[in-house]
Amino acid sequence: MTLFEARHIAASYVRAGEAVQLFSDASFTLEEGKIYDLTGPSGSGKSTLLRACALLMEHERGELYLEGRESAAFEPVQWRRRVCLVPQVPTLVAGTVRDNLVFPWKLKVHAGQAPPDDAALASLMEQAELVGIELGRDVSQLSGGQAARVALLRAFATKPQVLLLDEVDAALDDESAAAIGRLTSSLVGAGTTCLRIRHRSADGFASGTFALKDGTLMLQGDGSIDTF
Amino acid sequence: MSPGSVDIGFVELFASALLMLVAGVVSYRLELGQAKRILVSTLRCFIQLLAVGFLLQYLFEYQTWWIMMLVIAVMLVAATQIATSRTKSSVPGLIPAVFLSITVSSLAVGMLIAEGVVKADPWYNAQQLIPIIGMIIGNAMSATAVAIDRLFADMDARENEMFSLVALGATPREAAFSSLKAAVGAGMTPVLATMSAAGIVAIPGMMGGQILSGVDPLVAAKYQIVVMLMLSAATTIAIVMACFLTYRKRFSQSGYYLDKGLRL
Image (cartoon, rainbow over all chains, first blue to last red; front, side, top):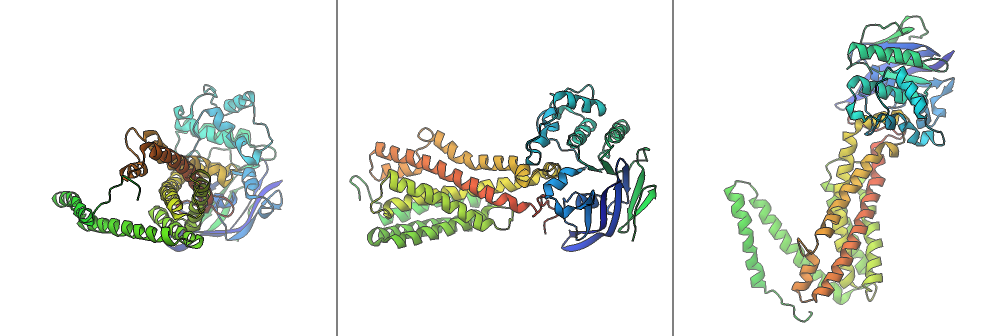
């Protein structure tokens, strides 16, 4: 089932007073339960495409759909809660691992919902292969790879339907990157889908790879895509 | 003039300008290149303060409520201009926000003190209104400039963090909240520090001036206490208003932060 769809998205960046068109007609669909990779030369607009999909910047043309409903029908915060982007630099809030994992429930968008209890958090930590790390540990004492996984868990814990990962494993050693791949694949299931920007060699979890080049998207591998 | 006060002759007044030679010599010896600035500052200090003295003399004699309101309006406009020119970041809509913050805080607290504590008679009496509202405007102006600068510098420093928070569904207010707290705290610090040092480290300017011009020290102390409390309340109102009226301008309509790459 198609969970997320982008149709004819166009976006540009203003650089030195001039608008630079990054892509003019990017269309793709993401199927439920699958992971996709997004590749392309640096500067081709991969991060911008993810930002536009999460309504974290304007797109000049095109429409975004979640389960067939257009993004304009959602409050922006409600859309972002469902289509969640995890940026490349993991930025945790000051405090403990637990503070960070339950942080989303302090936001108005989750008002009235109970945050996960410690048992649920502990099982998430186990899935992320962070077994030795207690929930009360201060985040300043985490390694880069551990912080990246906590940031990812923080997004996962809120159960977004679409997860957009912007090179979350770029600055990590191979072992941490592999752990993030395993974590992603264990968490993407019924009702969820994931699009990852990656520069590493394929890890076998992706069902399809979109290549962004010269302003258009091409699909390699199975999946579905329209190019124009 | 109150009994016991000593007027300063104009000869002594202009002779005291020679004190600025100290700053001039330092500037010359250290090649600070400040000669022009020292001269301009000295002249401005003379001209502005004497002008205000004459203006107040005139006001005390011929005051009507609408002249008073006009004078206060001019002070508010000038304070807004100075406060906004002091902030390093360019923010759209900063001027009306700062004007509103300084106006509301100085009129609300100033009128309360002038009418409720000092009991000005008539209610627009320049002798009470001008010093009280003037002091509030001056302090609110500095505190607002400090707070606004801190707010926007802090938000830029937290760009990545705020991006993550907005991506998780945070509203602009939720994403900016810790910067708002830091900015309000920074703006409140100077007044609170002055309050706790008052009397020990320094005799505050107003009390010192009153004692010099012959007012009973205890009366001067009571006035100074009221002034401190009023400044603390008024600057807090001004900075809270200024910060909450402006932070949203660095976010897009749909609520993401306009980082440096997205600002036009």
